[in-house]
Length: 279
Image (cartoon, rainbow, N blue to C red; front, side):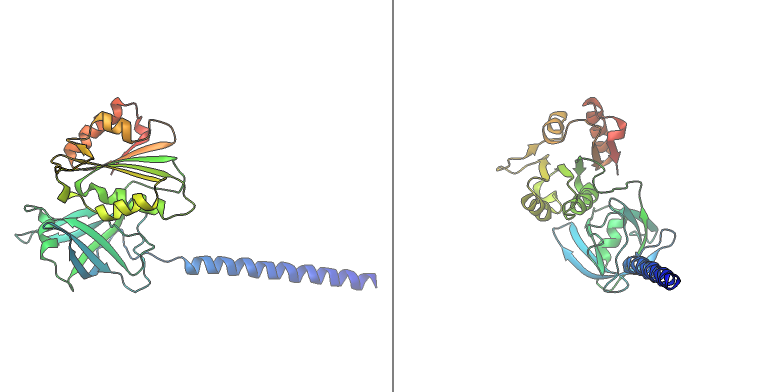
């Protein structure tokens, strides 16, 4: 009788262990099978079809590219960029980095907001693109990596089209309900018409008033303007961005002269090299 009970006990334990093992295996399978594979290749260019081109101003347009399937994701880590390959006005190949304004939560497509300069070599390619054309893309690229909660707050200094990586990082933070990181952004442009993604940025500031602050600076402001005027100064940085601390980081992205000036400003204000990152 005792032997039978012992055998039954062992059998029950064995079944329980087996069921648990199956459950763990199923959980692992569910996790891995539902983890979407990205559409990019870091070593080789892949072709993506332009499905929509929306003119936002005289020299800015939004380009929407389809991914391989309606449920595909681009697979671009937060704060990183892609390389786009095209041809300039004389037919020579040109490759330039761009940061999509979309995230992997946007499935089936990715978008680029492009400012096209009169003499820009890649600008020519984008200007000539028509719906149905293909863009050669390679990635991910970049040194920036982000994990929710790695800092208490980001201070961001952006100029012109340098807003795109900032927008991508800020959007990823704000749309993650478990991420409590705060974002303070100074965005500089020449004129009001030069401001990219203004509607989206203002909506973010309205929807997340306790976590996202934006301060616009214009070199040539309109008459009724309550933002900053001129170039971004040390006083603006001191007033608008979090002060130096071990749990904050200052990100910057803009034209080379602006990046150089901002680097000098934040050095003078006491931000260490570990507190700084330039895209």
